Amino acid sequence: MRTSISNLNGEQQNKLNHLSRDLKRALNPLAIICYGHRAGVSFQSSAFLNSGVRKSNSSVFDIFLMINNDETLPDSVVLEIARRSCAAHTAGNIIVFRMQDVLLNLKNESRFFSSIFRNGILLHGNKNALRLLPAPLPPVCFTSDYEKQALHTLLQYSQQCLLRVEKNLKDGYDDPQLNLILLNESAVFSIRYFIAAYWGTEIQAGLNDLLKFSTNITDDLNGLFPCNTMEELIMFHVINLDLIDEGFCAGDALIRTLFKRVSRLVALSKSCAQRKIAQLLPA
Image (cartoon, rainbow, N blue to C red):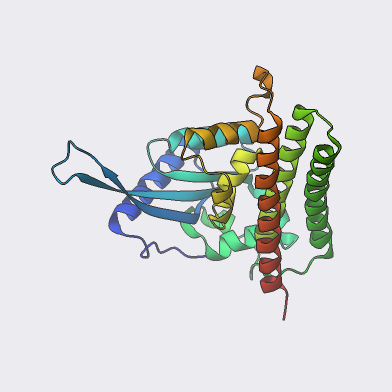
């Protein structure tokens, strides 16, 4: 496990140190690991600036927290406290696991946890807790038949939902809400498949959270659901099922547009995941 953050610039190191300090004060976790980092530079024109252009740097850190087995607060509450503690800083995805679950997953040779402890940056660690981690850590090769079957099931369900929508559209079966739900399911399961192939773990969450988590791997999937225009933002709210309870009814043209978008998502998830699996197969 790395303990150096020398690959980050001074501003990024400072932000990460502040983030770690606030998490320790709020939760006293057994370990804090930065397992992902994304940085970017944006330029914004402004008639009120002398230069006419404003440059801003952004840094987002993905954080893994390992907490005590006897922590009385539910994991969901711990996660909410962590998010609020990081609100003033630049935390991206935050994941929380109790130590017993971490040790069990490492015992079962989870690629997800092995990758975090092998490649993450240790910001804080309880020495007694870290001594209980297996040495050496499990490999990150793709070897488990159970994992292969689980991945096949995720992809198969995603494809089945998509085929059902395609059949409904061809047959003229007019139930927009059913088609929307099927498209959402297809998108969700395709991203779960994508994440599981890379990380070796299944993430159960909604479409929006899954897309955010996928940025730990690559930004490739984000381009399929951009939110840089009002039209795209509304389209994402529709596929994310945010508007169903408000009585929104998607027209045929929108359903067909979303069908094409989700079809591309499923195809891209499959090609990226299978390429990664080929890299992880033991020689």
